[in-house]
Length: 103
Image (cartoon, rainbow, N blue to C red; front, top):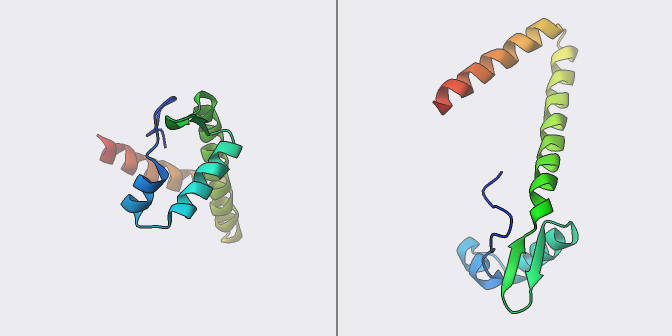
């Protein structure tokens, strides 16, 4: 989502667990999984940080997820008998609405 920048520190496991009111083991497992995927790294005695390559990987993952959602929507629209121009018109209307809200 772009909220974290490369080299940003993450909250400690305990701090985040308290903030989210979840078990610290859950946070620790999530951090470990993100570390294995290359999104985070640990500095001995200093904490956990966002990896520089993680930003590009996060964008790729985000794009993959959104493409999958678009694909599902298109499959549904086609199953309802909608044409490409009808689907595009709906997309354009929605984008216009969200662009106006962002202003």
